[in-house]
Length: 146
Image (cartoon, rainbow, N blue to C red; front, top):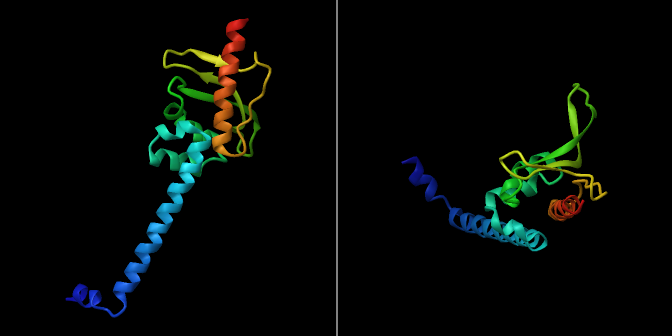
């Protein structure tokens, strides 16, 4: 009885239609935003929408973004960030500079340093992930040439 009465409330239908229109507009804006990010970093085309939203929502926290690195770069199992001085609670914090890229589940790793470039993961996530990809390639070339 109570549900039927509420459904018959005057003005409910236009309010629902308006809410539906607003939701569609929001979904379209989100899809356009994600498409713009995918154009800048095409590897985003190969991750699920949920993963992409997780990555984009944590863009200023590289350690959270890097939890998804294997979805973005299949040959990379993890990325280790250089630790800084101890924080307020005595724990080390990641400073955002890449130190080691683990290349496989067999334990192979690539220590950054041969290419003489420091890669800092800061700024727009789609840009610093592209930089990570390029620096990893340059580091591999430098170490293989040595």
